[in-house]
Image (cartoon, rainbow, N blue to C red; front, side, top):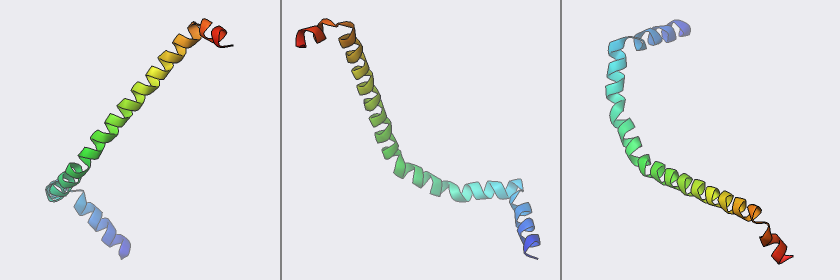
Length: 76
């Protein structure tokens, strides 16, 4: 009996009108969640961009230092 009840519920949820009603019911909740976390997403994207820029700058500096080997010869 439990399996038939679950299968009946699944059949009801597969109907297009029920899907539409569920979307309408949960859309305010989803909008609220998205509005709450959007600021954190912007912060994370900004931090990722800053980290990428710093890694790129370090790579460029290392390449310039390794090309100019006289820097190592002067210090030793």
